[in-house]
Amino acid sequence: IAYIDITEQKQVEVALHQSIAYYQSLAEAMPQCLYRKDRDGRVTYVNPALMKWLSLSRTDLLGKTVHDLYPPDLAAKYARDDAWVLETGEVLDVVEEHVLPYRHGPIYVQVVKSPVRDSEGNIIGIQGIFWEVTERIQLEQALKDSEAYLQTILGSRAAAIVQTRVFANSGRTNGETDSSIPNYVYDYCSEGCEHIFGYTAADLMADNHLWWSRVHPDDIVTTVIPSFQDIFAERPFQ
Image 1 (tube, rainbow, N blue to C red):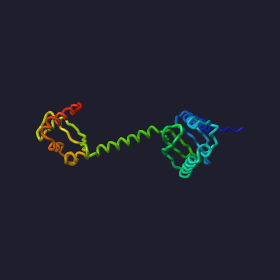
Image 2 (image 1 turned 30 degrees about the vertical axis):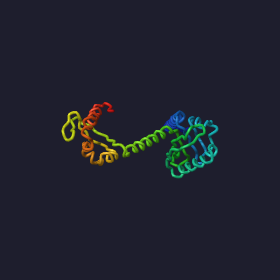
Image 3 (image 1 turned 135 degrees about the vertical axis):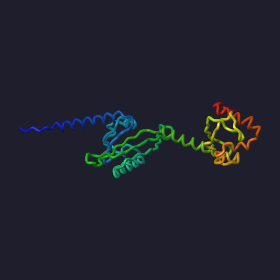
Image 4 (image 1 turned 90 degrees about the horizontal axis):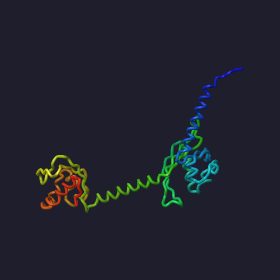
């Protein structure tokens, strides 16, 4: 009788089973939709999130291809994407837009497809994960629209818009120190400043009191100085 110590082999097997169990428990619980396919495009695994997304059971999905599950145009696109991943071995990471009959407006889905390799590094299939990102895309678009609208306002010749930085020391009025006005500099002057005051943004930022020469002395006393005092005191000026 010969005895062979297979302790190490058993330890490796136990570690492998534990690793598979950990991966399986994660895949089954994750909210993102996850699937795996073999090189022929047949589904070999789907998690519960994907079954819920498609309203199909695991039995309905296993062994099927994209041509069994999706309309011809979508199936052709998904097949091309799968072929690219299999051919290049690269990860595909895209945002797809879809129109669903039961949803108002398009939805957006983040899709990540990566190759599945065996122990020798050979590509044996594809693993894909996707999740809806409609809210994120809508927020990004709203931000772009807001920035474009802001640029339209800032570029208007009908208004002079400035951004100032205020310092603790006193400023000056018509060249003289005025303790009621903090010292300040312009960080930004809109294009409308040149149209209204006749000075370029660079001129105004170099001398923040240059535009005062375009204001009637009475208006400086009754309007400009009180407005500065209120603004620098963090009070609204009307």
